[in-house]
Image 1 (cartoon, helix red, strand yellow):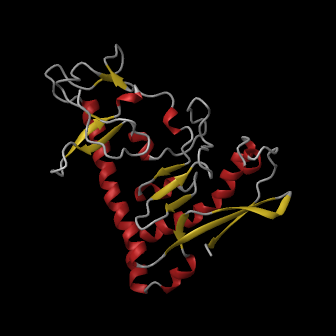
Image 2: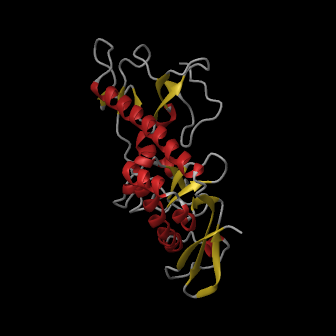
Length: 273
């Protein structure tokens, strides 16, 4: 079975294979009871459509660089995800980003000289195969089953949300609202030595009042203003994630070999100097 072209695979994906009725006619798909692919993944892509839901559970930031991407933080340090256990189970009743729910499926180009996207999957996920139980991917006449149609519809809607997300980020960049972010978190028992996190971008609140009233009115009407506020409100959850790391033994001190400290600490955002 031929794999799709993959010069650089997206986060989670170890391989890509196009789904087709010839090779996968009798295959079924089953739900994954755990997300082992999430273990050690601390930053997950997020679409603008999800900001309002996600901001209740995670900090929302923007990646560094010239092409920033919205991300939710499930941990503050590389290799730390505070929401999954060592078996990949999410035990908290939190919002699960669409990027996670889409896996192991994705729309991808099969050839470089076309813009057409085909439904592909990661065969290493073991979520579909010649199983005895599960939802059939194709009907007896080899047409796509309702299950496959629903998967395709979800992936198409995800791509459409990605277009809206890019438009949102482009608006922020055009208004010069994104700045280098810095989060300083001081633990209650050692307030004079805070831990500082950098390497991300955030909206500059001080520049918001300088945006033209006409633009603010436009953003209020099309929902962009609510997305900005959701992002800003969510940043306070940085200290919550930090506390989760400490409680789980993955705090900065624990990583250095010392016992994890207690307390939630305090967080503040500031422009990187």
